[in-house]
Amino acid sequence: MKPEDYSERTLEIEGWPVRLITYRLGEKWHTKADNVSPGANLARIEADSKEEAESRATERAKQLLSRTRRHEV
Amino acid sequence: MANYAHPEVLVPTSWVAEHGKDPNVRVVEVDVDTKAYDEGHVPGAEAWAWTTQLCDTTVRDILSKQQFEKLMTESGITPDTTVVIYGDSNNWFAAWALWQMKIYGHKDVRLMDGGRKKWIAESRDLEKTANKPAPASEPYRASDPDLSLRAFLPEVQQAMKAGNSIMIDVRSPQEFTGEILAPPGLPETCQRGGHIPGAHNVPWGKACNDDGTFKSREELQSLYGAEGIDASKPAIAYCRIGERSSHTWFVLKYLLGVGNVKNYDGSWTEWGNLVGAPVEKGAAHKAGA
View (cartoon, rainbow over the protein chains, first blue to last red):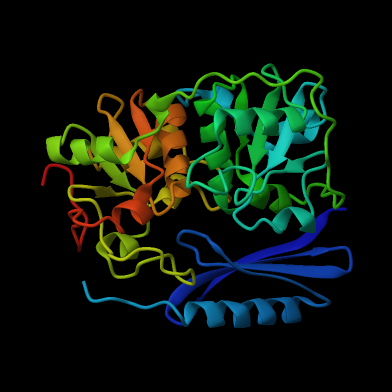
């Protein structure tokens, strides 16, 4: 099986850059969200459409990133 | 890849597509996200989970020699096998696996340049069935650990005091300054933020292109040279738990040919929790400053 319709974009969530990588494997769409630096995984979602996969991944990323505290330096 | 100091440690995705199932080649996927493999992987590849198979799960440590030999034997790997490792996030944890294989003296271990991301972006075949190779017919015999590749806390403390090694903190600028205590979205794993006094900040991902492949030797020399890092000086790389820094260790040792470079895998989760350890906060130390 070949991955198709690969796309990659960066957006900002809760003040942090988030990279969304999406592609289709057969009938299913896969989206991975990571925190760009260092690229740690925030969400990995499988869904029936690209929109649903990216929406759910974004929602999960938002949950995790909202917990990140910024400290005074 | 020809102009890297040791080009033999990298193979392009096209090489893996052609040779991945050769009898003496074993392809292994090591991901940050251990579920990625199940989604689909390079045909014939097996997976090693960094959380359970590439560390001692009782004591905080890398694999013991005995544990390493068991993993190799169970994976059908002999000392003469060509092992190609790849993974997600620019081969971040794949480099961690390669570092351990080099510690235990495996001769021919390579990274697939660009890792999982490039393989998928190129729309190459993925296989969903998990591969479990037949064990090797003879038990794998590893070398004694090569500790010239690994730095422990006392050596790092001494190096900081003496200033005789370049200390490279490969975390993000926000982790380096102390603004955050862990990468965004991850649990905080230290009591104090900041960095080892005198350390230089070169985030590990800067060594890679957008497609996940490594930058050219000239670009890497420019990146690290700007921080005073070159092949003539001993260097110690660290991050939060030692995996990002194994990636930088790989770049310095094999792509740029730095002879004396070590990975301090205790990293910030050790230093930033240590009672009485000196911590510097704020912006990066600059070469010559």
